[in-house]
Length: 359
Ligand code: 5AD
Image 1 (tube, rainbow, N blue to C red):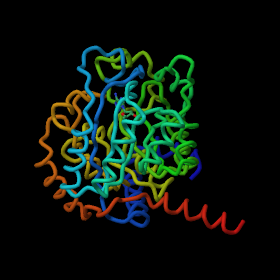
Image 2: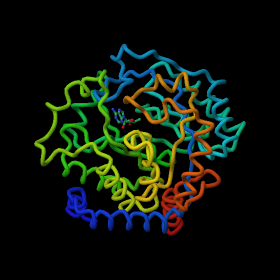
Image 3: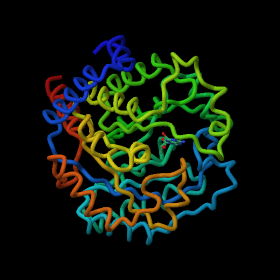
């Protein structure tokens, strides 16, 4: 799909045409990744962060939240709970915790791998090549690092680099690929100042990066962040500003499915936050094939407040588990079994092996 065509879809508002987009995305999803919905147990194990991203509630200058880092035993217990609930993957997510030692993390991964058959996904922000390599050797399978926006001006404005270290997430994504990780990235939809042309470039980039996983959600203003306080001044002219709405998020989700047919694409918590009663269903029927139920203990979960009103923050996850299975089956889908590896990863590593054999 050409970028101009993506742009036309982003600006499309006729219900009949949008219905055609949803149906096509749903068909492409079914033909390429099937009807299983893979569940990933999300463990938000530390909200400590050295960065100052102007949209994010756990940014380092935010003194209004209590900080925590779970100990290895607590995290292992969560992984055990994920196994008991039938999940094939845990996602270990944290802020860019400055005191998280590479060796501690490697031991944790080794521990989970020794005790369970879980696939381990990491989402720990921007880390050095050496750390990423160590964790891969310890057994980590996948890594999530959103590039957030492909517009360098916006990225710089909202995402200050650490002193002396230029933040280059695209370069890091390339490193993750060479280390053999299943690689995921994604964006925020409706950042102040983000235009439809920016968004079309983001979606085009998903395809050029040949992503194995794509995570995206609406930007939700957080009152204790600079952007949450004064977002209106940052907006582009109304006809060019991307709205941070549910519908716009589904458009991006559907287009991501068309551009990366074999990728694993979740309906993220941010989407469920905008529509608690039907967000999962709408996402699943418009291109998504993954849900990431939160398995973090309740006391910590409330402190991992990257944006306000997070859908999972006040629900008891045991009852949510049964309800979720029911909601998935009600959509004519089933809960995926096994690790739910990305068919895209299998495809590209196989093609690489074939190319090398020929050479
Ligand atoms: N609204 C929505 N998503 C957010 N994230 C961070 N802050 C917000 C916000 N205010 C997203 C970022 C990050 C992911 C873990 O959470 O895209 O990569």
